[in-house]
Length: 415
Image (cartoon, rainbow, N blue to C red; front, side, top):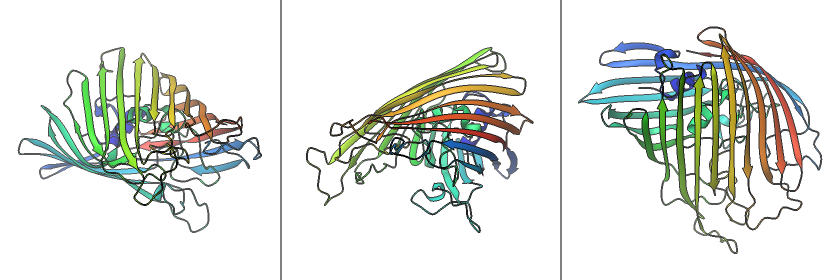
């Protein structure tokens, strides 16, 4: 059974979904009775310096991801928190059975808040980091027909977008650098909507010559005041991967995802004039990744209506209860020579105005974008040293904008 931490490791090794895990760091394996046990994870840390535009009336971008005000420096986690993931698998009654529980602590102290362990940072004496218990699921199935997953794990929509993001090993846009929390943003909200880790019941087909598909029901998410849910969220993906990195010079994959759910105003809430008490929010995405003789390219895009930006169903509606459309994507290119990988990427996420919102003087977010230059050096098969420069820009509909420049130096160890 491949845990998603191992998939992250595979991406770190510049591998795709079809690459055998033996080509990545395999974790710590043992056999106890009928069960095969595995422990895997990572630890990372970075020094990050950032430069922010001054805070004034022209740099106000509500929900923008570029900082304003004082510059800052920190020692912090990157896009990945640290992780330790426990997995076990066995064969029972002609079924492959597995279980995974994953804990993801940060190195920075966090403040208590609605986001739990992923709330904002709290850099004061006697602080403590949080632990994000984002994985707890079991699976059963067979290679002939596929598998069923029940529990909490990474979502399907936009999953490949983050797993193929080169800043997964590094920092990307820092976010909250003066008081860092468990993770940075990478390219979350700057080229893709965060896939998230959600309670789910998901079926994945067997692999048919590179083709596979998954579909599942998920815990529906709130969208502002819309907190009533009478049906589950639905996500699905279809993908095709080709080539063997051991024998083929060209390998790649393509994928399509969809997410949709209904969200409703709870009983007793007055429906704003002209608004609906029930809204459907749906988004789709598509991507392609190609690898050829050390070169790698990724092209990704998405479009949604009533889904929001940065996180699923965040900023999905106006204050008056009208849907907002959103779109975005990123392009990435890299080249690896011996132990050094050099990468360039650019991405943007846009949030449209709802029908009851006006552009003039509006400080609400129009777009978040960033460009990243990254250097990734494989010091050993487990340790990667990282250097990145990130230029982030936030724009408002009324013309305001803010720019943030970050540089990050550090490293990550997988086991």
